[in-house]
Image 1: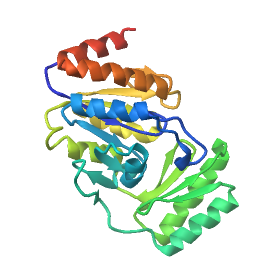
Image 2: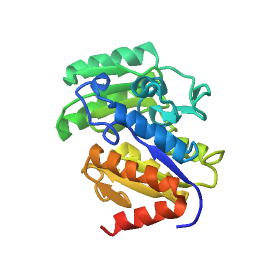
Image 3: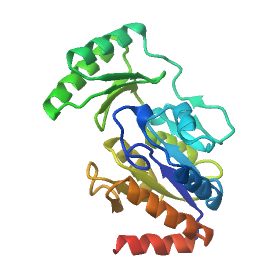
Length: 257
């Protein structure tokens, strides 16, 4: 590994936090907030959340910690912790699409429709055939009411959002500017929605860390659960304080474990 400074790109749900029945029911321990603060300092501010959540939701979860963030699968970007949130698309879903999504969720027995502002998440616990039927109907609703919108599949969720932005587009934008430009990126993610982020990280010469079984085999390193993510991040915090060479030694030791 070269002596490039190291940057961190972190998914949240399923990666740092265990999933909960409702997005607002996740538990954030004070120790995690302290860990993030330490990673931010040790990396020279090169830490970004890359999440399907809105950035406002991330701020509430991790208060008082704030960081650079990519939200709503690339629809939102905050370049500095104290900067305003930028939106890649200023088009909100039309009322007709909202109504159709609510109707389809009820018809397919999806228990929660989450309005994220610039996107709508339909949470479900459906088996694959029923999920695919709901996904198809949601895509048809987009074609009728909001051309240019699409349906993104995640873990027990279908995200209805404007097409053309992904977690990768947010990562690529950050990697072009300070403090991330020229750094060696590490990305942590647990879901199929993180695979494009992994592709972006590799384009920049970095390392992808897959968490859990859903995307097992897609990362350069594999972890089993959020608890292992936090343990590795704690090790990375100490390694970062010793410089990029120590981070390289840590990652090599994990790769060969």
